Image 1 (spheres, one colour):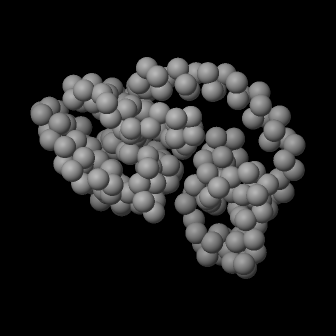
Image 2: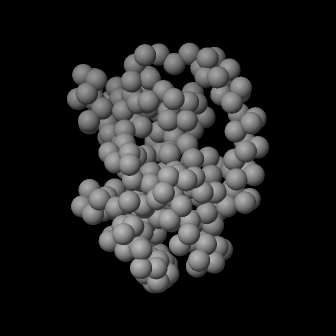
Length: 213
């Protein structure tokens, strides 16, 4: 039996996905979540095999949820199911550790099969998503190493980035690194400016993607 948690901020979609997956006798939906943090809490409680994760959700988005779940429960497979196939969203999902990425336009049977394939250890990406990833990764491998070397990150900045990638808040980071909360906050602000990132989620994804974690 494949145990699945569904994370989507729209209730009617969660219910619809549950109905679709429940058609298959080998799948049981054991938890429902409306954002990434709730999905993480569901994983602690339900210990699922697969999380079906939307990307754009309020407060704690899919990237946050993927990072948190993969840190605490590395064996849980995460299949992104979203309407967005733009480069930034795909990059956030893959960089956070998603095991698959499919679009909501897929028919019911393909969604079911994708869940089964991800649970079996296969990476599943929809056709247009796969092509986008292939082109992006081919162009970015060399660029990533070169640009990272020129950023001049200090050891303290790297330590803070690792803590952010682990989902820690400013108070927890301050305690871990023996710093004042204000110092942590200022360092994160400078990092966002230096790396041209918008928020902590992007900083966490950047850290994982560049293997600084």
